[in-house]
Each structure stands twice: as C-alpha cells, then as structure tokens.
Image (cartoon, rainbow, N blue to C red; front, top):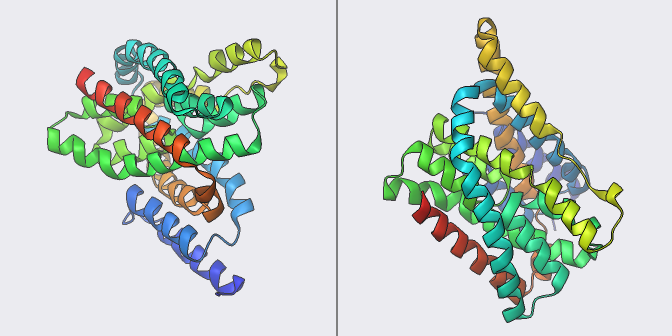
Length: 305
C-alpha cells in the first residue's frame, strides 16, 4: 500500500502536467480516472470543492474567446432541440424506470442529469425532492461513467460521420450530460464547435431553475432549496465584453487560452474524484436505465442534427 506522501506527490505531478497544453481533455480525464481506481485521490475532499469552482471559472473564461453574434445564432438553433430534448428525456426516463423498477428518486435524478446538465442538475434537484445520499451517489455515478465515455467517443464519431463543427457542437450539447465533458469534447473538434456547444449547453443549463421549481411544487418542498447557476450569466457577460471591447482582444485571448487549459485541469480533478465505493454503489438497473436513456437521446439527436 502506497503511503499518503507518495500519493500526494504523484497527484501533484499529474495535476501540474495537466496545466500544460500538451495534455488534452480526454487524456486528463483518463489520467484522473486511472489515479482514482489505482492509488486513489489522497485529497479528495479538497478537490471535490475545488472542482466545482474551477469549472465555473473555466466556463466564464471561455466566454472571453467567443463572439456574441455567433453564439446567439447557435442558441437560436438549439432552443427547439433543448425543449424537445428535455421533455423527451423525462418522458423516456419515466417509462424506462417503471419497466426496470428503478427507485423513484434515483430515476428522477438520472433523468434530470441526462436532460439538463449532468451532475449540476442532480445536485440541484436532489435536495428539492429530498433524495437520500445513496440515490444521489448512484445517479452521479451513472452520469459520471457515461460522461467519461462520451468525452472519449464523441469526437471520434463526429469525425467518422463527417459532422461539421456547428453540427458536432449542437449534438454534443444535447447528448452529453455534464458541461465539463461537453466543453472538453467540443474543444477537441474546433473553436466553432466549442462556441456552439458551450452556448447551447449553458442555455440548456438554465432549465435547472424551472425544473427544480416544478420539482419543489410537486414534492411540496421549500423553494429556498432551489439553486440558481449565476456563473452562466457571467459567461454571457464575458462573451458580450469580448464582442464589443475589441481593443482588449489580445488580453481576452490570453484569458480564453488559460480558461481552456484550466478546463483540462478540471477534467483531471473530476476523474480523480471518482471512488471505488461510488462504482460499487451503482447498481445494474440504474446503470441500464442511464445507458438506455443516453443511447436513445444521443441517437435521436444525432439524426436530428
């Protein structure tokens, strides 16, 4: 058994390596997962808190490299897909969960994570429906596994099918759960794909608010438990600043590049936060539900774009 000091040294070295552009998003995530399932993350409590904040700062920073007009056009195209996708996901999630006899709260969380924005949606909906910690852990585990697969698989599929950058950006924003994996996958495909995917995904993420509000009303929960993702508004503000303050373009480009690499570090942290205990808690039925729902939504959205 490796001592904690050695674990920390390896962790820090990998973390530093991910801060350099030679390390891609998929490689960083893979390195984090390997670390987690082999020697383990020696500072997992600290990195879990850091991951959430670093992801938000990374997304905001990416806004400084995007044009508002291009993003608005992408958002218009994705609006109908977003509404249709969220509605269909929850409907299919209900049907599949009944067929597989998956726990009610677990199925709601998996559906929310698939429909909106992965772990963020699960974290927002869980307290509102008063889900048990086991339900949340299982849902997060399912979403995490599928996110990891999507980040590695989607760029390959996109290139194989000859998808354009806007097409890939739209598809990844609809079909990949977490914002981090959407941005990670689309950043490998091209700058226009990244702009399209990020804008649509963050617009989609705003649906956390009405979904959690509806959940609170259905479960007669305290409305104070609803969390508003304010960082999304900061992203759009950064995008507007970059579009209209052109004299500062060089500075904004530096911020954008730093944010893009910070996202790579974030993906390493996300991978390292995986634990063997979480994997053990993910039962067969919730996993089958999650993967069935994901495959159906991914396939339908790919045909649509």
